[in-house]
Length: 218
Image 1: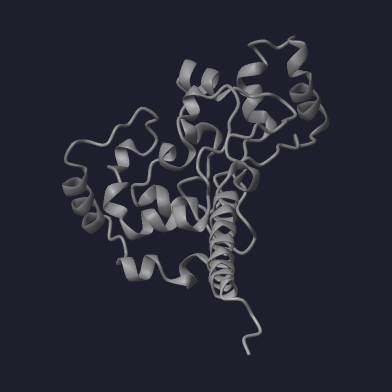
Image 2: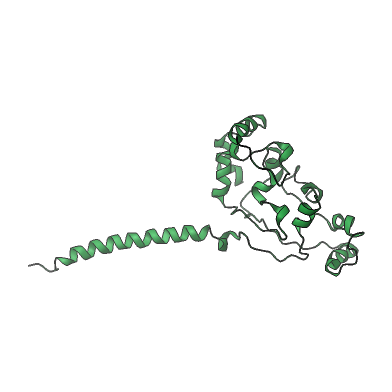
């Protein structure tokens, strides 16, 4: 005696394939969500105590990155400029502008401005600015064209996959050290040949070391 109708076989197959399809779609959705700006905060404008314009200071006035980020070549942290650095110019220029009063107040009271970090890696990730700079990784490679940003935003995802893309193929990204701080640098047509030469010249570690877990997670 047949308990189930023959159509039950078809329905069971459809339910199995349907379940697999739903799981697959959920995985795709989760992957897309994890890479979206909702999670990575890409292109998200942060409210700062002073709406400092890199487009004006870097792009317009030609101020070098190292004038403000003084430790970028020698330490893990690029450095946040003290208020005195701002006042080097603004004690003379726009020294009565109302929107710069928080800067003047910070200088008078010797109280640091509370800047909001735009590029904020998780605590379990180790990143050293000086290593990257001295190995020929340009500022704009990670931070984008900050000389064109009225307000700095995070242009890269900063997720592990993005880091690994560079660590697996450093020859695609390294540039001559003399051009590290150039915002308008464009890779040459022979970038791969130049990159391989610079990888050897700058003694960049093998890919196996660059992609080892302990390199970034210590």
